[in-house]
Image (cartoon, rainbow, N blue to C red; front, top):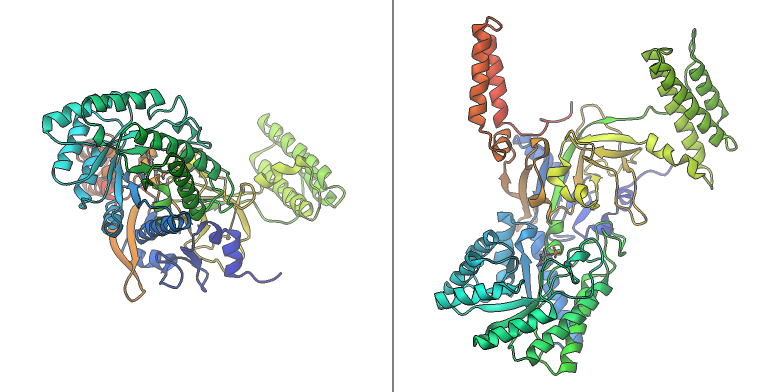
Length: 635
Ligand SMILES: *Cc1c(COP(=O)(O)O)cnc(C)c1O
């Protein structure tokens, strides 16, 4: 067998397909993150984990490189500039980052600081987000797009922000919001900048397709838009209407959907200009997808287009509609969230153990009292060859079922059942090996792969750290951060540490289809084996929940310094038991007090001597200050 190289691993795990040139494998076989791109310094994730461990910072851990988001912003800006040139477009590009996608301070502040040059703006969808955005977005030229439901307080927050010189645009999502806005604007004597969100009829396809069409949650119908224009005209405020917005949903996988939506929205735009609104800006929302599996298809975890194609098609459609209508090219706003931050964060967790299927070998005969079933399995094992592997598989299944029945009615003891199980797996292995040499394998044997799959247990919570994997079957790449120059010899699914049987990853990215099992290395005793889940920067942190009270993971912010060396900018300690219980209204101090009372009672009742009582109590209450995850390295 040819020896395994890091290139083999890069290919196996698809790094170049989903990695956007931000990940690579080092000569030593470790996974590296390249926040500034190739040749600009690397963060070796294995070294990072070892260094942090030395400082007492344990996994699971989220590694955030906010420079990645800056690069993505830059990319969007550059790509739109190219598309403008290509189509002789005269509007400006004004990127906006929707903060709901990842609100983390380090990330947000870095984005705002960087966005300053191009007047990148923010998008807020609630009063809380609006306040956050008003405070951090210190640039009167940057747009602050206000989406979401708006009550009086929301509107007043935006308009008072405008009084301070900020630049909020109130996007009318529901017809009733207009009256609220007019009323608050009059009361404060503050002119609002307004937009309308149109409900497109071209349905978005894919998982979030319900964001458009007649029953969509947000947006105004043609009739409602006409009503808004009339009402504004009557109020002498039509000059406030400056922007048209639409959003067809997140992770739009097909470029055709984008094109059709932009074409339709452009018609609304030119019609609004015809009706006398000044307009000036067309906001095409989010939806720019991430190719999580690298397949470049319209599969839901992928996308069948590049950023280049996206920008070029958007600009072409808007330009064409404007030329036909004789309307000036509007400034273009995108609200790309996922595409900006997904690549920023990598989840790292340790494998704490594995349930593995016994490896190959012939079933041992019993010297005396061999069960009928074990004998049958030994015969099945002998039978396996190119012609009879399917028959052997049937015989093995019969023998196992029969043994399980015999056990239930008391005819077989526990040890005998265990021997049968082991022999069964050995037959399965041999059948699988034979089947692999065949050109055609009947469906009948499909279950074989599942039977021979290991389960690797990871010290993380799927519900906390990868909620979309559970909620909407989102695929993320998963790969080891070490031993990438070694051939992986096991096939596994990954289970988390929650007590929930849904807490597992059993679908993995690949260019073709979805893999049901991931190639991993055999664990070595005493050696830490860490897995990475890249591309978790969008939505995962804020949607995560406290299932089993497993809390947020520790996080580190990393970057590359001027000398090209990796640097840890900030360490965020999270997820003490104290914090998790507080989220469900329990006070760690009160709980500790109850434990103290129980300890006292044990001493008074003579169950424990005072010294043992103190040790027990001390140990128990120290748990409130501990991480919610399993501690330390695998032993
Ligand atoms: C969620 C959302 C976005 C971000 O969408 P992405 O697919 O992450 O780019 C943009 N605009 C609006 C109105 C949203 O609700």
